[in-house]
Image (tube, rainbow, N blue to C red; front, side, top):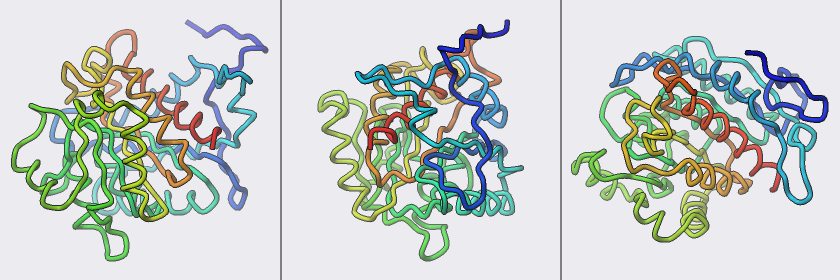
Length: 299
């Protein structure tokens, strides 16, 4: 069914391609990683699905005053990185993000599984990392369960992130192993569990996260949508009952994106091919894109 047209109700998305050498506020880039996922996934179909879902929403912040993000920001869409898995694919993604980051204040990468965090953070030149995730992603090897470890250990010298500048929000019981919990503690990663986030509130934990990860000047934000409650995100293979409510995830994303040190972000672990009939998972991911832009607009 076609969406209705109303000249007074513009839609989000359908942004033009970036023009080399022309400054933009935000650039959207698809990074459809999926081949090394430790769970079966069709996450490579997700960037296109998120773009389609964006058209269901307006770019308006109600305020007051009301703001049209399409008018307040220069937003571009750079298409997708071709086959971003494997060594050559990772390098293509790193190079493309690095190229786009020279002219953009914020890179928004649409995954794909969580392995995209590794090349996107590298390409953006991140020296700090904040994850919204139920999982540590500190596994050995190369998979969607290893990007945080890889940024600490596997990235080329000069591109590695000091683990004491990593903050993980939303880590959950029964979604991790004790061994990886010990690894995080031994490395000095600041872990703020989902229970602590709820006890302290969004503003308090965001302030701490930005202070810790922002000891440098460039922070990458990894938004693993499976941190949300499974009822809200059935299209995330590893989501569990009791995760963040949709509003909590959106509030965290916007609050973090307000800070100018957030130079890149990714949306990960949504499998558009496994979503509910109403598309609720992909729609939440699309709203997180808009929350990133809302934060950017209020800097």
